[in-house]
Length: 191
Image (cartoon, rainbow, N blue to C red):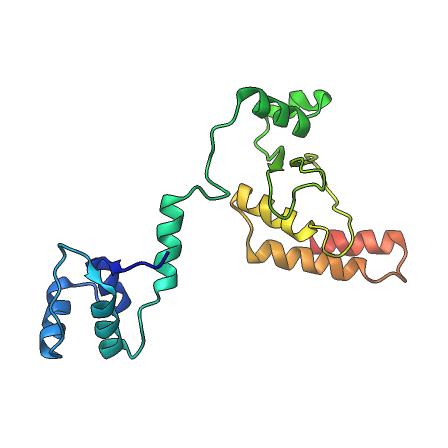
């Protein structure tokens, strides 16, 4: 659904203004409709103001996405689930033998409902993580990168440095002519 209005504050941001007094002064100087912080500004007026001051139209798509995110539940928003379902997911990502390591501050795993990572049988995707090292193996398009990006979002730590490290290690592993010990030394040097 297309938005028909924009807030005064968002219109100021679209025009790269922070001071409302200065913004209104510029509107008057350019013979544009003077808007106030009270009611929202209609689409036609907002487009005319931004076109005159910035040489472009309002990026309505951005505001429609924000409105959608505020009104509809997104994939990363918490949802109410039956406690027994949550308990089952916890058991799937935490093996019985690993209960003692729960005191460590680490990501145990992830469960994804729907989307790209959903299984073919409509079951949720569950990924259990070992505290030491994890290796994802799969065909092209099987979801390895999607799973890594999901873990990065959950851990809130996916960074350019991590991406560079993974790229360097993969480049080292691609050199198949080296012996295992040489490869191990190179990987340790990078890490």
